[in-house]
Image (cartoon, rainbow, N blue to C red; front, side):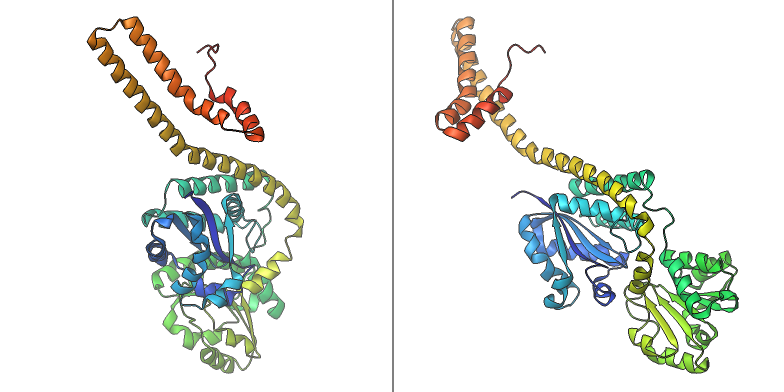
Amino acid sequence: MPVDVLTFGLNHVSAPVAVRERVSLPLDLLKPALGGLRAAFGSAVREAAILSTCNRTEIYCAADPSVSDRLPAWMADFNRMEAGSLQPHLYQYHRNEAVRHAFRVASGLDSMVLGEPQILGQMKDAMRAADEAGSLGTLLHQLFQRTFSVAKEVRSQTAIGAQSVSMAAAAVRLAERVFGDLTKASVLFIGAGEMIELCATHFAAVNPRRMSVANRTVARASLLASRYTAQAMKLSDLPDKMADFDVIVSCTASSLPILGLGMVERVTRSRRHRPIVMVDLAVPRDIEPEVGRLADVYLYSVDDLGRMVQRGTSARRAAVVQAEAIIETRVQNFMHWMQSREVVPAIVDLQRTADRVREAELARARRLLARGDPADEVLEQLAHALTQKYMHGPLAALNHSEDAERAQLLDLLPRLLPNVNRRH
């Protein structure tokens, strides 16, 4: 059965954060997930990689086409979900459509923030995880390498990433809507990853009164805090100190919410109902969604920020057309490479058949020479036998063909048969 290139999953367009967080996989779970996928499908999945971010969870496969119908049930089962609740949010792309999707994702065309660069690093992490899990073969390795090359070409030749309005910048704008000037505001960052560092950079630019970083690992919190003249604290200190902050931005890798409704209710009472802006950039979410019902809390999820960012991207839409043209050319190049690979087994079989014919006729010729037959006669018989066997297939096909098939064969024969007048 021929191998199919398949992309399967969901993203910020097809699924809300409440669904995305249930199938989101941190890096340390990618290998077990890949192992479970290959165990479930056996040799039907030749190669596989999983890309999981705040905005998408996608499986990239080199697999038998039959796998396609069974993947939704596997994803639901692996994440302990009802298949019916997941199915409406899923999409699948095959062959050239799957390749085009990968190129668009890496180039930032499929991102919540048009042209955002972080996705490229996340795709490289997905490739490394697949390689370490032993599920990355020639086809997906080539796909990812070409994906990175296309992304670089798009970013260098178009303005797709110019003046990108980031999620971090959007978080600052939302806080300014509530408090106006942030120079008197206190800002707390929960987590110490790349997104929190981006947010800290943007908030630092508006000179808030103070900034603090809370993280499970205090050393990481201290390292990040030192870059922005901020303070570091333990996560365990949050219940006692959260009331001191006007803006809270959270993005951790926790699989469960770390800020619950009860805790935030106590914080709002301590603040005497002064407003508090809470930005949850994590998937799965760090802040229980029920917190948004509190009168004094302005809670924004990653989807809320995404909608805000998308409204500011119209000026760069023209660059999308140029980027899509680059991607389309590179998709065609990759599909040509794939088709060339698909011909290889047929070429190998043809060569082996020719070798068997050659060896059989040579053995016959050697026996005749050993018997004492004249060399010229033996050579003549050898040439005649090889020619007859070589011509048998094409002549038989012509004799048994009719009309359109015969016309097609007559058109192909000049390209398949050797040109004796050609100089080598």
